[in-house]
Image (cartoon, rainbow over all chains, first blue to last red; front, side, top):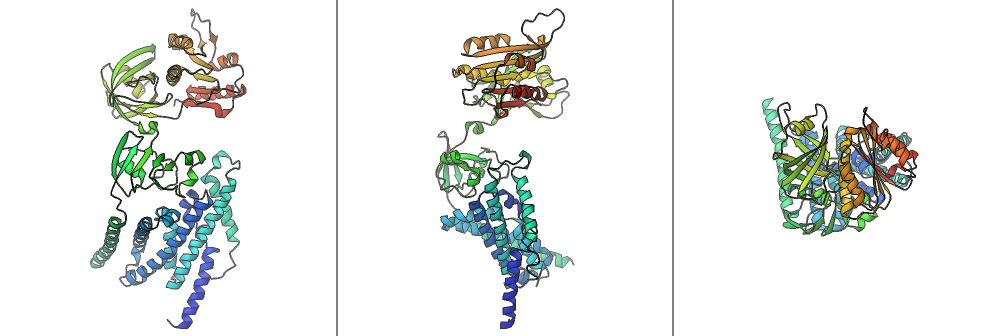
Length: 202
Length: 367
C-alpha cells in the first residue's frame, strides 16, 4: 500500500464514518437492533452504557470479521458461510470480553460489561459486519464504518432515552404505553434523520 | 462437489470448535467462583456452582422465579430481594426498580451474578408455588349444583397462601376425558388451616373438570393441585369494603372473611350476594355467623326471581339492584368482585355511578 492510496482510504473511511452516523444510520434508517433499542431506552444512563458497548463491539467485530472474511473465507472459497461464521465469532468474542472484564475490572464491568450479553446476538452488529462485506470496504474503511455505525446507534438510543425520560410523566393512551409509543417516536426520529440525506454523497 | 462440501463443513466446524474450546478454557480460568451458598428467607440454604446468574441458579434448584424475557434484563419480572452479597445495583436493573424497591435491596435476579455467598428473600407466595398431592377428605353439598370439596394435603403437608388466591386442579383422564387438564378454582377455606384446602365448585354442564368432581371424585381419592396463584387480595387500608359475588364466586370472599376474623379486622364490610333463584342461595348460616363474629360486617343476599309459593323477605332483583338500593356513598370504599364477566361489568358500572373510583375496584373474573 503506497502513501497515496493510504491517504485516499483514510479519507474514504472518514466519509463512511460520517455517513454511518447520519445518512445511513443503522438503527433509524435500516431499523436494526430494535430489540435492545426499545428494551433499554428508559433511562439516559443505561442507554449510554449500552450505546458505548455497541460502539466497542461493532468496531472490534468489524475489524476481526474483516480478517476472517478476507484471510479465511475468501481464500477457501467459503464466502457463503459468512453468516454462520460471523455470528459465532461475534458471540464468542463478546462472551470472552465479558468474562475478562467481569474478572479483572469491576468498575468497567459495572458500566460496560453488563451490557455485553444483551448485544451478543444483536442484529445491528451482524448487520454492520455484513454491510461491510457487501459493500466491499477495505480494512481501514471497515473500522471507520463499524465505529461510525456504533456511534450512530449510540446517538439514536441516547436521543430516544432523553425523549422517554421526558415522556415518563406524560399521559399516554394506555394502548400506546411502553413499546408502542417508543416505536412511534422511533419512526418520527427516522423521518428526521432522512433530512440528513444529501448532506453526504458516497 | 462432495469434497468441497466435506472440506467446507470441516473448516467451519473446526473454527467453531476452536472458538468453543477457547471459551471453555477462558470460562474455567475467568469464571471460576467455586461453590457458593444461597440462603433463602433464612430458612433454606442451597449450594450452587458460582458464575451463573441468580435466576438460572435458582431455576437449577427448582425454584422458579417468573420471567418473560428469559434472563435478558428487558421484562423486569424476575425481581427478588438480595439482602447480602450482590454488590451495587447494575445500570441494567435501574430502569425497573423504583425508590422503595431500591431501598429494600430488590434486584433483577437475571442480572445478579452468583460470585459469592448470597442471602436472598423470595416472597413466600412465589416460593410457595408448587404441586400438592392431596386426598379428598370431604364433599359437602352447598346447593343443587354447587359442592364444597375439602382436600387434605399429603405431600407437602402444609400450604400458606394469601386470601383471594386460586389453585389449579389437575383433572385426570376418566371415561369421557382423554387428556389431563388443569382448571383454576379459588380457595375458600380458612387460611389458618394450613393442612387443608377447600374449593367451591359449581357444576358446568359438560364441563370436563366439574363433571369429574361431581360424578367421579369420591372421598379418599388422590387429587393433585398446584399453586397458589393470583393477585386478587385485600388491600392494607382501612377503607370500607364492598364484596360482591354470587355462586362459586363466594369462595375467595369466604376465605377473606375467615382471614378478617382471624386478624380481628374492623373494616366496615358489606357482602352483596346475588342469587338467581332462591335455591342458588347458600352458606347463609355461615354468613350470619360471620356477622356475629366480625366487628362490622353485613350480609345482603338478593334473589332474582321467585318461584310460585316461595317466601323471601330480603332484597329482590339482580345484585345490581341490591347495590343501588342498599349502598349509600361508595366514594371512599373499595370493592372486591368475583364472578362472571357479565356480572362484573354491570356491577362496575353501578359502583362508578355511586362514586367509587375505578382503581378501587378489584375483581377476579371467572371465565
